[in-house]
Image (cartoon, rainbow, N blue to C red):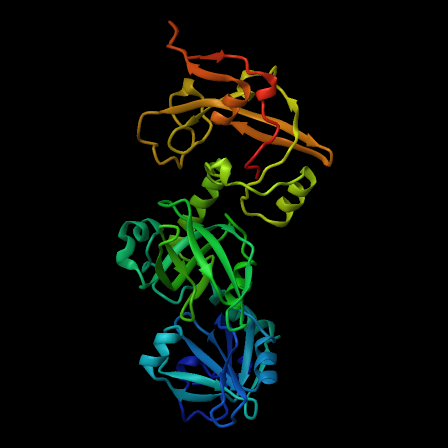
Length: 435
């Protein structure tokens, strides 16, 4: 049956039928694909254009919509709305869907039908009615699959290549969002690629790859470490180059942002706790990159500019000198002890890690102790302040190493600084692998 007169006579998706005359449907866009073109078999030398989207009007019902037409109409229609918008579709054609074909390339829906929007007979507009929008917008936070039907990132990693080329649901938090990369294929088509790093309570970093412009635009609005995603029908694959599993957004995928579910709420609390603990910051530091493999040379000003434009970790060489090195400050600011499991800074006297999210929380405390300095480096273009100098690099630069001392009679533990003063000429002025 139709909605009440106050609901503007909209026909519910659950009530749609091929015999429905002049239906008027309101829904919120929960998924959308890029515009594609195909050679027109009826008009040689011309292309037909198409794109699809999915709308939802109740917690349990949503339906796929497609539109075909010329370049101007299809691109104009596609550009008129995006995922998250509330729309009204006037007089779409209600057609029976081919389940085998439809569910293979489009999101799986509970409806037996699909909608067709044409330039000649249909009209789509953005909904401006506050009452209707207040009813529809909360639906954005309800997953289209059972909220308990998902793989954790740990499950995916554990199953490994047995999940290769499968389509599954994932619940994870957003760790970081890279900048999109643009390219041109061999046949002249332009494309883009964006990678998102996901995490949960079992894995600290897992790649999600987006190829479609619509998916990329959605992902770019998310706030890292403050967003949880329910990703329905993500394609899992094995990346042989990186030797790891990855997830990819495809034409079947629906991404639900900050789902209104118990499972998502628990993960959101965990993500917030881990983010505040600093564990993710430690993991974000660049790994051991062979110095011989680094060829990019930067001035200090170029490093500052690149860091502002590119949030990803990068490596480079700068010819500069250490202009500030506070070795005479308090020992706690020069030498730090960190939990061997989570890299969180700890106080050895407590004999436990204060990070409640530490994976070794039930195990005896083990720590690593080393230099953790902040230095300034300067060249003719400026100064980089508070650069991290730690670990073996700091030991080699300073010509010193730290040896834990035996426990004293009081049970307290200290550190002995053993130095063989380096020749000042051996303190290299090129600080590589700067973030």
